[in-house]
Length: 70
Image (cartoon, rainbow, N blue to C red; front, side, top):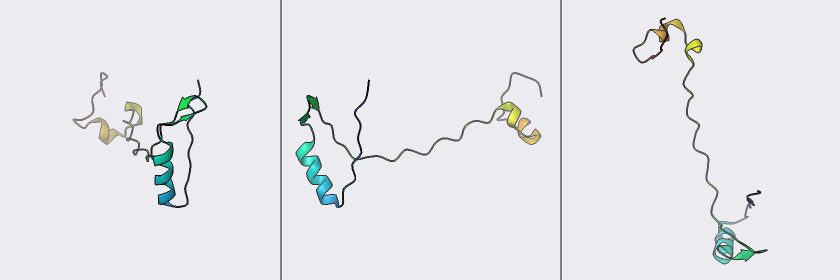
């Protein structure tokens, strides 16, 4: 099922505010519009390294937990 998401860029912030005030919560082709400003994605978290990707110094640290003997 398509979400019906669209992105619009405005020349001025005043025109964006005006469009929001006029169009938010109105109906278009039988569907209610929900208009909100775009948000930046939060930075991706650093993935935990896999045990086989660690160098030998990291394997002996106390923070390293493994069910296998090193």
